[in-house]
Length: 542
Ligand code: G1P
Ligand code: ZN
Image (cartoon, rainbow, N blue to C red; front, top):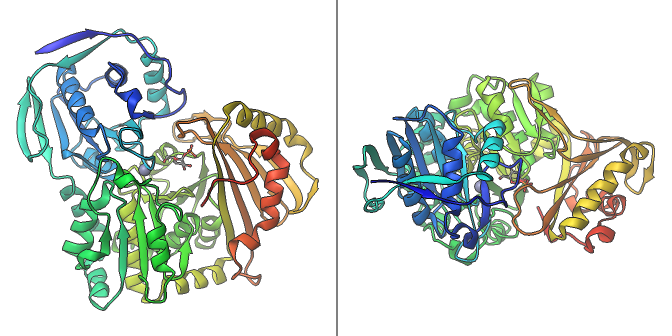
């Protein structure tokens, strides 16, 4: 039966962010999740009788939260929920299922690549009917609503059995528990030359995928092993765990060290890859050849025509501002429109919906295309596998060819995590105030040509987004970008993006650390990082 519960609002939801990400303990506070879910429903209209997709990355609290959302959807008048079995659905799978089944929207339970378990993080995101993150306008309304909410609706009944696929009812709402992989695997089948990849595997190609005990395990086993014939040993950490096996499900060289070390060995895999907590990010490493996400986007753009789903070519490409300019060179050579957007996936959604782009990506290991409205980790891995199957050369050869054709953007991101928020804000304020003095200044890394703060006018919805990162551009195409993370849950995280462009004919085979050493030094002195944060070194370099 429907129950109306009186509640008091919480005031720790960050304005301007989409979704909510906090420590598990916070989410376990009485009415905390309920308030947010009701705030989302209160800001939507016309969902009565329609379908809501619900699933998460399997982290601690996923099941309890899934039950609450199902019960609240029933009490608020949704007609049907499509729920992943055991409450599991990857972020790209939710996006696809919303689109395929014409759902009103969906809720993803995840804190992406943040650690899980009782002491870890939990999160919730709302996606709209296009399958992408809720628009900024809707999410701003939700945030405001969450500060004034006084009651929520929930259906009081027996819990739904999440462990079996099938259909049941909660009140008048239909509850369909679906296999998390089926629809997604069918979509991959439509896009890729699965037979060519299977033949490559059969011919001895050595592939290794680290699912990091996160959501992609079941997807990877079904697609790589069952469909494409890779041995079961090709997927490691393939069982989702509530605490990700104690690990940090962030597919970078620090947290996916096992596959990195394997790929650096002579007898290691030809392609090693990983995905994050909710399956939207990707890590690509060839034999003795790490591919930066920025370079991966550029290579995928240059080779997409080799993949059946993209054989007709791309409409355009987009990258987030801090992502390196490697894809710009490809777009220029191919005559494709290139869009530079603020960090975060929602800006790509508008361009994809408008048909302006086919491919997009971020330096933070998110790459995707028009097939969904989220970034998609396994899709990126399949893109690489299909390109490798078509070109029949190694990852290292593909990279060397690419640099010879387009030049090379040496690139690294330095993260100063969990720094004091006041110090981080002071750093940004001081640097912002000095921007107009910077052009013409001679630094260790060369002469500064331009310095500004990135803002973006979205032609599709005519929104204007400011304060998206401080950019320092050097003569010759090098660049340092500073911005504060919007996703950290403790203190502030300062991200410094460092890039040096080496044109065709230059030295294209240097170690990245050497190639950008002067920019690294300059990145610290220019912003007074030690003075403001007390840190002399970043704690994560990707
Ligand atoms: C980070 C990444 C960004 C990505 C977001 C969500 O955000 O940098 O590219 O879209 O996570 O996965 P940030 O913490 O930098 O705000
Ligand atoms: Zn993620």
